[in-house]
Length: 248
Length: 248
DNA sequence: CGCGATTTGTGCACATCTTCACAAGCGCCT
DNA sequence: AGGCGCTTGTGAAGATGTGCACAAATCGCG
Image (cartoon, rainbow over all chains, first blue to last red; front, top):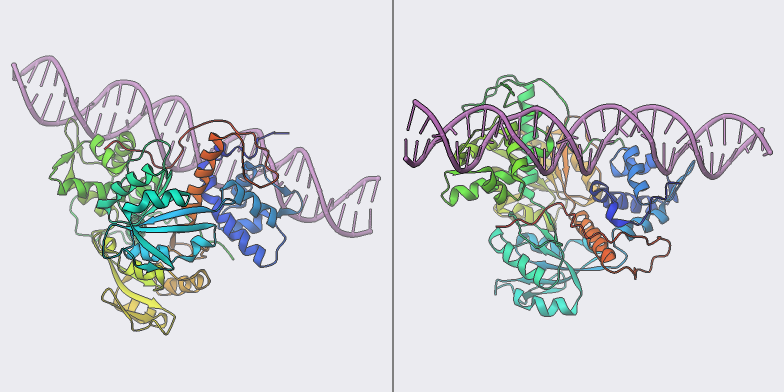
């Protein structure tokens, strides 16, 4: 009797949205393994989360589980794919075909999840015309024309930091409202445009912090050469990461 | 009078830790631009966050700001680098030199932030011996020997999902306690080992959700072909992303 | 048909994170 | 020296996220 208005996309907690793709991946795995239904416990384990959290997440989308049985795998896949907007396949523009751009262009994981890289762009004349994974690299100048042909809603920026803002501006200008930014810099975009950032070096630095913390907790004498830092630390061995171990 | 025990690495909020690398990048930029000091407002803008949040974050490390003036850029860089454990340069093992592994091996951003890729590994005999960005690809079998020579504390997994768990086990076996996982799967590791996951497809799916949400909020008639979903949506145009526009 | 085993969905308490608003501290100018 | 303007550091309130524990619902079986 809650009448929770499932399908109200605006009221999904951001944290839940961030986990849905993970559930989706786990569900595809279970489907391939021949499971028709799965319990919250089983799916939670496969996705690496707590079962209570999973149930709460699914309940937000007006869930389709059956008490005493579990969730229908195929139905749940449909539901999540609908909510994530994966039922209409999205065209992606990838700008910057350097080291990382090459890898992204060839990354199979995009296609298998409903994303189609519609075009590659770069500003370096030496790269123009090159064919990567079956796609030709166009000059960024051609973005407006190609964006009009294909219906591009998402842009991926894999350029050096110095070029990223200009690229973002051009993407926004042709109507892109979602940007995935691999360049290590802050992008300024108009309201209504979403930017997600992935910085590989940042992830390593976070790991480094935890290494440092663990080392400091273990041996009471910091051998680091830095000066100031008063070294009073609690010998607390908490694990702390953002992802926990999961028993298979 | 708070005697907050700065330097107590264990009591830094995780959310703060995740932002420190971003501050660090912004600070390096400011230092190069010739700034000796910076206000919380200025640094916050450069890092793409709220100034109050930034001040609270910095206060957690027993901050070194001066009221009425701001923060000493060089000192703050030293502080953050110390806390993140970047003062001792860390050796990283990269496993999997496929598409993505190649890109990571050549990514300049690692070296510039104190990380050294100490060795490349793969299981594919065809790849062994290849030289990528000055590093030779070794067979994963040699991991124990090389890990003993270099002092490797962090492992990066860029293999297909099927191989990732086995690689993780081997990394853990040679004493690695921090893992950055690019494979789209959940890793099971013993307590005390930190795993961070980066899944490029997940980021796109989150963007896709926001695209879907924005589209649904705009036009009241969902053209999607999926059946069930009751379509009562609130016409709320909130922006919602995880990163906001920043006026330069 | 009724009962017990099982599993979902959720109210509630707790933890963490964010934001506001302002007192305390600092430097500069007179 | 004293006052003024600026900026930090932080208490408190609000928002968001998490996890427990249990009632409600469903299935299978006797």
